[in-house]
Length: 145
Length: 134
Image 1 (cartoon, helix red, strand yellow):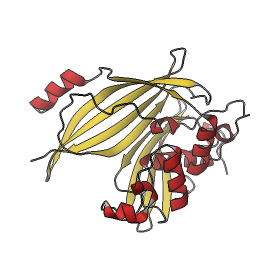
Image 2 (cartoon, one colour):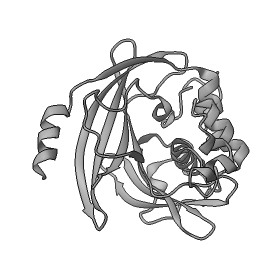
Image 3 (cartoon, each protein chain N blue to C red):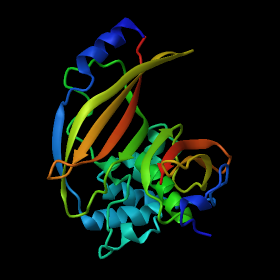
């Protein structure tokens, strides 16, 4: 691994840099489900005994910042992908807390130069502190030459 | 036929093809719902000025399509994880197709892994995803 990336990893990985609360609105999660083409009733019917937000709904929730304040800018960031890990259902009507940290930093080098990938993870917890979901956003920055 | 339990799933089987509604009306409503009101998601002309071929579906909508497809195939399936790679924009008002194939079955832990691909009419992959369900 490149020395500069190793240094950045040591400085930034796994340190919480943002915390934000979100209220999960039932009407919004139902509409989200409908627009995605969801057919399972537990995501569409607020009276269903297992009513819950669709698994990827949480990926729509953004923290106050994507990167730590002093994180180096290698270039313009582009959305390279998203991942969601579901540990427990997110219940509409509840309030969840998102805690953000950098989960991974790595590079890939191609013909056009080095690209830096940064994975920002938001861990979501319910009001009792139960860990519900991890939401990863993968950003790629093409290094300025 | 909808899958109801793990032992009905076979390795290598294709999921029923899913046709997502990628109309501009849907992508616009979705973008506004989640607070992403940027013109690139809601206006073809504005998106073209940004260098896109047209207004694009938000990436998280594509992710939502993948999960909807899984539940369409197996309504009781619990999605444990889904990871998506956005290779190219999903352009609104263009037809897209989502295909999926079962790539692994973990009988001991009752988990199934599925590869999912969103492609446009030319057969170009726009989004690739991997989901783990039980």
